[in-house]
Structures are given as C-alpha cells and as structure tokens.
Amino acid sequence: MKAERPDTRKLKALKRGHIAEYRAALCLMLKGYRIVAMRYRTRLGEIDIIARRGDLVACVEVKARVSLEDAVFAVTDTAQRRIRAASDLWLSRQGDFHRLSVRYDIVAVTPWRWPRHLPDAF
Image 1 (cartoon, rainbow, N blue to C red):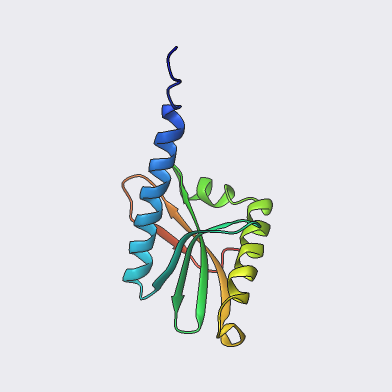
Image 2: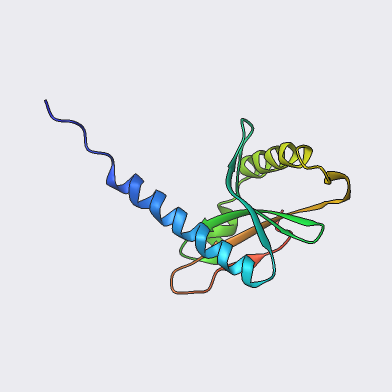
C-alpha cells in the first residue's frame, strides 16, 4: 500500500506564505520596527507578525497576492476579528500593556516588488 503524497499545491502555498512573511519582517525592520513574534498563535486566532517600535505595537497581517488590491481585500472581517482577539490576548500577557498603543497593519507582498506596508489598515 502506497503512502499518500502531500498536496503539492498546499505545500507551495505554505512556502510562499512563509517567504512573504520573512520579506515583510525585513521590510518592517528596515523601517525601525523590532519583530517581537512571527506566526503568533492562540486559541482565538493567529497574528502573522507582531512588531514593536517604542510604545507602538503593530499587529501585521501579511498577504502575498498578485496586486495590492487583492492583498487588501483578502483580509476579511472574520480575519480582522480573529487578529484583534489574538492581539488582546497577547497584550494581556505583556507587563507594560497599559502604556502600549496597538495598530493593525497589512503588508502586501506582490511579485517583483518591495513589500508594501499599509499602517492602520483596519
């Protein structure tokens, strides 16, 4: 009996997503952000990147799409709610949460372009 081969399309999409997240993290670091967490998972949801610059915490959703518009529209209301819920949980675990301000950003990663950072996207 042969073992089933993993779906290569899913593996390629996963790899493409991880590469996009690393490109987005590099973009943010060059803008002066410190990457606090990548792929932060909770029972409530997942945040692709948590970045910090001073007292500002940016919860970043990374989308690899063909165009900027496709990337922005790919962040649905449901995804936004899950990211906000996960960020609330992350913030509650920080010792200095009372002085932090939170912002929700999108980084759109498109082919052959530098990642586009959209601060305060939702």
